[in-house]
Amino acid sequence: MSTVTLIGDRLAETDREFVYRGEAPGCEGCPYRSQCLNLTAGKRYRITEIRENAQLLECALHDRGVRAVEVEPAPVRANVSSRGAYAGSKASLEGPCPHTDCPSHEFCVPDGADFETEYRIASVEGDPPHDHCLLDRSLTLVELSDE
Image 1 (cartoon, rainbow, N blue to C red):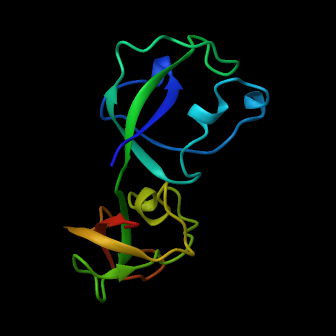
Image 2: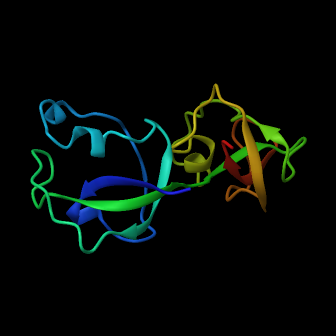
């Protein structure tokens, strides 16, 4: 189900994904707060439609203003433990990883997911991009859903 929200005009592109970070200090006192701040902080979203006939609104944070878009929650690609990793099962992230130069780091510490939450595996994507986990974890790349 889609939600209508406001996003910076420069960022308003169909299929663009973003993680909503919540209210910024410049949002205080804005007349459009209720239309902008209506998403869940820390969750990943995908823009599904741009409301072309909606007017461009002034914004203290976005130099070209904000416009109305429709967004839907987007799945998060992540590495999880290979044990029990199949579509429909539940999984949690394995934990932080200090190896930021690893090709799998973005999937071990993905934007839009946290370590304390259990997610449903929407699909199994296969082997992670690394050859060997430096933390000796046995991992599988999946798409997570919080539904």
